[in-house]
Amino acid sequence: MSTATARPTTRDRLLDEAEQLFARSSIAGVTTRQIVEAAQQRNASAVSYHFGSREGLLLELLARRGAPVDDHRGALRAELGQQLTVADLVRCLVDPYCQLLHTEQGRAYVRIVAQLRGRFAAWRVESDSSSTVHLAAILDELEVRPDLAAPLRRERVVALIMVMTATTAERARRIDDGAEPELDHAAFVGNLVDMCSALVLAPRG
Image (cartoon, rainbow, N blue to C red; front, side, top):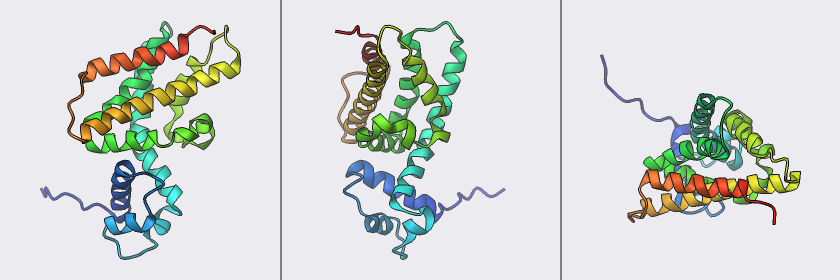
């Protein structure tokens, strides 16, 4: 039986190179031409041909990493049943996301997501719904606070996402730069769960 590894397709190479470029530089600062050249493609229109547009490439890149994370969230949530705390729900969001820190590709993904923080308030509209089903359901559960007005509940959900993504991205950056994090992985996840839970549970001032 052959043990040869299948060569990556042009589409995969474009996604892989864009992922690293976006993470190490910025989404806005990387040109389509740079992506095409990094993927060693001669066709200057390769991104448009395979993804329709630069935005199409970004959305597919996000869905490629985000879908398995969302599946993991759904599996954790299903295990909890109905008797659960805010911290339990938050951990369903945080733990699968932080697992991405264990690989270079995962760290690139979380560094890219953090750059999209200006779009988090509209994430339910702009995200790929097929890869955020469980994320949306868990956030809906966290948004149920009868003692808070709906606008405040929505603000807290956005703040939770921003803290989770920004804090994880900073840890990813430090790991990529060769720095030794002060907290081990379990302590980091536990602290992040505590911080995000506090955002949801804080009383109205």
